[in-house]
Amino acid sequence: MAGIPDLSGTHKQEGFNIQGLMAILNKQVLAAETSLQNIQANGEDISLGAMFQMQMVMNKMSQCSEMCTQVSSGANSAIISMTRNLKQ
Image: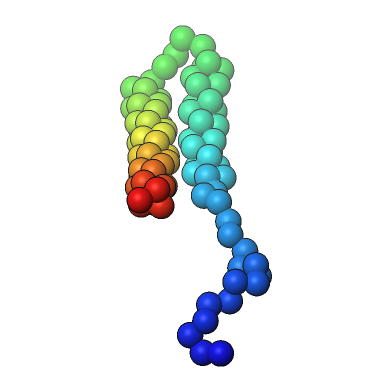
C-alpha cells in the first residue's frame, strides 16, 4: 500500500544528547585546573606568560560554557515550540 506510513514502532527515537557538550566543557575545566596547579607549583614566581596563558585558558573555558548554555537553550526553545504546536 503506497502512501501509508509505517506505524509499526520500528523507528527508534533518541533524545537530545549533551554528552559531547559536557566532554568539551570538562576538557576546558581540566586545562584550567592544570594551569592552576602549574602556577601553584612555581610558588610565588609567576611569570607574565603564565598569567596570560591562564587568562586564555579561563577565557576559552568561559566561551565553551557559554556555547553549551546556548545550545541547550536553543534545543529547549525548539522543544517548547514543537510542544505548543502539538497542543493546537
